[in-house]
Image (cartoon, rainbow, N blue to C red; front, side):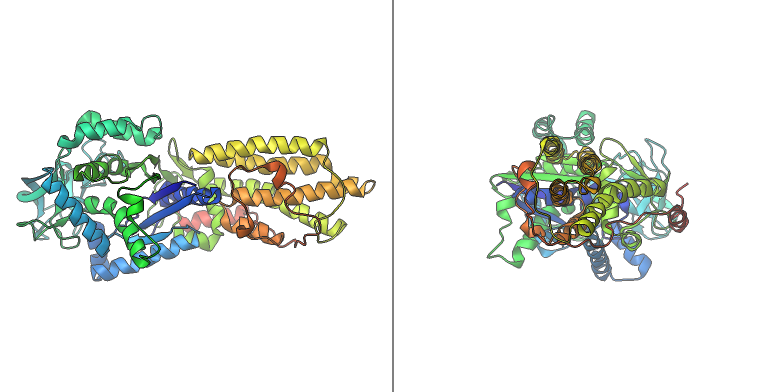
Length: 565
């Protein structure tokens, strides 16, 4: 058994996640966590809300709320949305926790002691109308690199370049919209990345055979351009205090304390039941831990460069990421998701339209791994109708209804396997092995293609075997065919469980089984599994697993959630 540490990028607490956020980090990490648990590995799956920085201050001001209360409100909304999507975090915490503050101060002290912190006076944008400095996200403007006119002061989400607010063209205040700005000097603390560049570069190069291109290429791009000192303090009120004399009026930059939040949230989890849980065995001087991170490509620079450099600079033996699964973006109906413009499907609304598994399957089958993917309701309906309703759902209903009406509501006895079943077993074993291979490699689109292929083989088998015809002349043979098909339902449920947990439970329940009855996926043997449900086991037919999405419903959804054009 292996220890697998899994973290999903921490969503900003302000606002509600949309489908792009889900497929960009949250859902793939959940699928991988569920899969590893089913392999019998010891999994710790950590996430939480990222609560410091300008997004929280701006959001709270807009709603006229105290920042702490605002963060609590949206933390709970995030938590409820993820529960509705069946995300199986071992703990969903908060970066504003006392545990994270303690660790942030500890790590900063070590960096300062080891000579990796510098004090510098910098020029920063000051808003005359707002009467305050405007750090990073308090400033928007045109990106000097790609011309995107809604670039933030810390990063352009269009080209992913990390920015300084003073670089923006035609900058304006995020608070008031004022362009009455000037540049003034202010003193801040910097992480000296150039001092760590050689060690960091060697570490990144060691990941070349393993990391996906999206992550590795972004990390190398940063290193080739040469690392710059990175400011880690801000002129804000909301955040962790800076534990250094002379900087009492500033707080740590959100991108300094947020990645440390993975550790802080784990400590928060461990502190709830200290007798049972130990955060250090996962993060500090840890042994036999494989650490996997999931995130969108815009977050890769901070996780492939800044956060590892931060840990390197402490001199302590922290757990470093082994595999960084960087994802590209999901677009919506030809445009971008926008809550303010009421365009796009957000997590809270998605589960009101269809059960979570409809979305989970579509998103993983179309995961933006090598390049961006596009969501559209026509495509969504086509995949649900064809794969879920037409292939998987149809097989389950067809088999159980036929067996119930022709023989009875118990797994039929009689008959033996023939060459046809042995050929099916061999074919499925190959596909199952490929499915596991792609799941292990986190190639999710390929994995789901194999999963769908496994379902298709079940349909091919029953269509070729024709138990409805055979039963007229050879009831024993028909019983063997239908018994094989019922066992295929169990196999399909097991293999589908990481992606569609609720559907898998429903399929198993029809056979009188629970997920707890399922053995480890390790050494999964189709020849054994296809005989696991024995003759005489009662079953129920149940309702259809999936409903078809009609053209009328598609048009209704397009109107309701905006075209994105």
